[in-house]
Image (cartoon, rainbow, N blue to C red; front, side):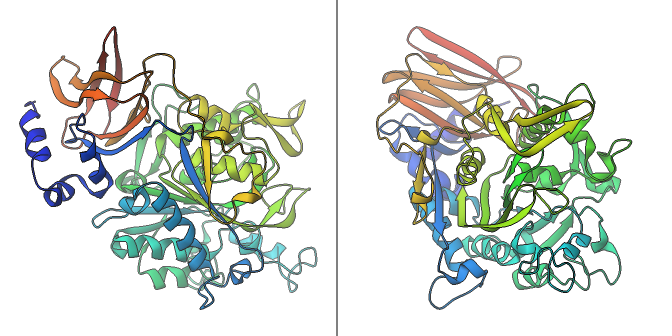
Length: 511
């Protein structure tokens, strides 16, 4: 493998316009940091002054047309205007990182939340069931089509070609493949999703498709809970950006449904059922009786987050539900939370959503909406996937570390918006995430003081691949996104050296 020092020199000394073309607009600002050698770096953050690790944008839809899911409104209060508001605000607050995700040439998948099957619609509407006469299924448990259309249009307007945009989902009954189907995306779709697809000019991929040519095995890394890998549709590996748009709901076995719980629908249902439970993906919920549901499902959610990380979360909490994720749960009831929110850290975004639902995302366990019985055991709590993912370094569930922006920020309670800096007491090089990765991974390190450091990538034989950082680096937390695009699969070493400190981590690039 040839040394890339000359390439780094050429990039740093090229014009700003050429540099942006080579490494993308996401890194245009790193020229201000002379210690960075950005040939393989396409994202970089330095947190020094503030204790905030990330931002979440939130808007209040009360007394606006968006509260009734009106898509476009000249008054500026429709769903499209609200979605553009939170994504634009987030982009501005995070120095262009949102728009950079959707630059020209990127392939993007949007995972919606259509839990259960198309037959669940019988629970809603005056002509079907008097139990819920005034709400529709897209107002309670499914991602509303107007929110999907607004997010998709934002992505296209940001630069993504409609042919590179994919709406992905897996229905419980898979009836959208049946001729004449009234299911979402079926030939006679009665819910409005097919109209959204036509309006956007994008693609739809059925994640339940188990055709051998369309599926692949994706690793969850060495630090998994229940699954070393998942069988998934190849599109989830092929896209550059993955967006999760869930409906904000309480959940009978995971406490809450948000962008990360929405990952359950990324694997084909038929491959993850177990005997005696073919109604859902039983392997993910409660594979063995000795590992109760209240621990197994949150851990499975963490494994799914490692296999296919969420790059952007947009949560539809305008009209939702409490007591459970669907009308099959005894305590289920429609509800309205009047919020839309978005974030690049899905753990943080889901944590804000949990707070709005009355939960404390920092706790190890969360209360269930009703008692849950597995075998002879009954529990009213479950492990929190937000806590578990925070422990893995996948994102923050600490409200004091999340900066809220937008006109809905006051809807979140007990958030200490403190600007007090939190500096580490020692040098730290954290494990990269995800690991294994393809083709990019996040590297995080901490400096207790400004120091001259080097951060270098080596192959398993000890040959230098490239130096990412060399120079005087300021104190604080540093996060960079490194891509191994163009390199061979295998184990790579990332070594950080400072005065009196050296540390090496192993990173597995798995195509």
